[in-house]
Image: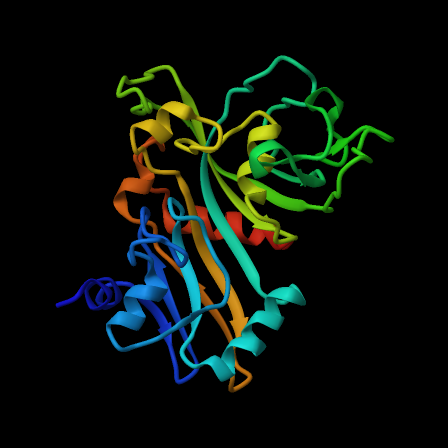
Length: 281
């Protein structure tokens, strides 16, 4: 059995004549790897070419959508461009504010990170402003830049992420250095990117003081020690070629829950978080 067949066998979440949704494990790229270990190339080498409709990062797990034939790729891609695709992620984050300034507010039950993004040195995505100019409005539960603080010397991209806390808890987690941070506090968030910018969720959460556990963009030790990023593409909703709306749920693997106090939450708790994100809970 080749690697594509092995990966595919236990990961199919949805399949019809036009589309394939897989629950991607962490550590496997969707496309673009030099040595043929990404999903698109593995599929082609196995005689089943598929065409990625979007990407999630190599160290991010969860739902990824492929067109099974090139003629279906355009329609699926346009759904992302029109923002008719629903995407919801789960993220395990540091709940303790990492900086002392006012923007590092306690996480609300539901909030919106409304921070434009830009590209800085070494092609790194960052907020298009200074950290000191990020503020949190408790009345609207919204993070934003102060008026006039957005950079005007680089191209910027309006970016919004809606977040809700699923759980709160304190638990030990193995850090990138291999030591246990027994007093670390982590929370499980559900996050809906209202826009689809590169690294949006990772940057938004880090810049409001709640970085994702194991994110190599903001934790050099995690990157050096191969620690997984605790970000998971949990739900994906799109329209099939036959015009039927499909809502796919990708269960996280057991390792994703390791930093969460008490492990995986009960399904009703996850369902309530999803409804809050949709504004109906």
